[in-house]
Length: 522
Image (cartoon, rainbow, N blue to C red; front, side, top):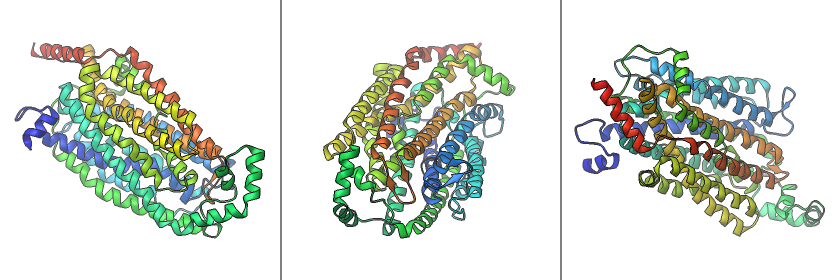
């Protein structure tokens, strides 16, 4: 088994980073994604569906409730993303007996857990301004606290080893572990909430009966407005039976709260395990740099800035796996549990792509692998957009498309971390300073921009499509589909463009590491 693990990670027995550390690093990633996903995927739904801020009659001041939630998600995440460089600078200034990155896994586990649970407290009252205000404050606090652990976690990968191949293998396994953690939350929570609230919803028999009773009115809508029969039926039948809207919302509140508590309890020990079983080998020992100095370093790292630009442009490429996908499953497909299937369909392609990353990198380099898979993803999503979803065969095409979209998702989940690790070496080669914290702060910035865009587009799509979470009525299901898929098409193509100018190849990275070692030996 030990020989297999050494082969998997490319490590050398008794020398440098060991498999035990790589496994501990990956375990922490699972716990981290339990926390990140319960907030990133379900706090929005908690606000729109459980607290009913998405209901059509809800106002936060003069703004519609759904718009207020969308703005909160966007502004908070963007604000938090631009806190990442500050945290990166703090990491680079950190000097402890444990290193500069590891201590934060120990210090921040409990604060992150507490803040996560507070965001889902079931005591909040539906549709009230004070509830919205308190959750907004708690969400901002959670974002800052999470950043304090997130930035050093990813920076730790460059402190474990400076071998780009080993680091790439460790990050491949870590990202797979993170995907597992996110997948458990993404798949499990909707199945649970759908099952628990099913007693408050229309059954298929009820919907069919109403469709028969309203057949003439439905036919008239189809003829006059040019909409599908499904859209016409949705104008008469919602999701939740009118007499049970508040009971459904209250049940959702408690379900999300219990889920948050459960995942926090499981995740906390994983942070401590990662702290205890890793070791930092490559960290600066000289005087800690200032924040301004780190910003100057950031702008000297042009290769990193290209990755950041690509990540920002690609913020909407996987928007259907965020809140928008859950809304689509819940209100258009009429089965919240299908959101799990939507996300599971991406996993096979992502898993295959993740396992092939070392081969693809060796064959085509990181740069061209990244470019090609995103162009491929853009083409797949364009086909999905023009085919649509409103027939069984179209849903089959969409399912195949989701499987194929796992390829760019799997490659991106690993490749950007490995490329940022290479830019740390590039920065040291160019300036003599590594700046792991400030460099990997850009990765967390990219992630948070993606989460911000995903949540924002999801809620805006819900709002424009005319979804009312209180009743489940949907005015225009097609609008939700079009906004989710078209935004992904644009984002897939756009994110490939900056990478044509990226120049750190695997060969060049090794040459830079050798030159750095030669300088230090003198």
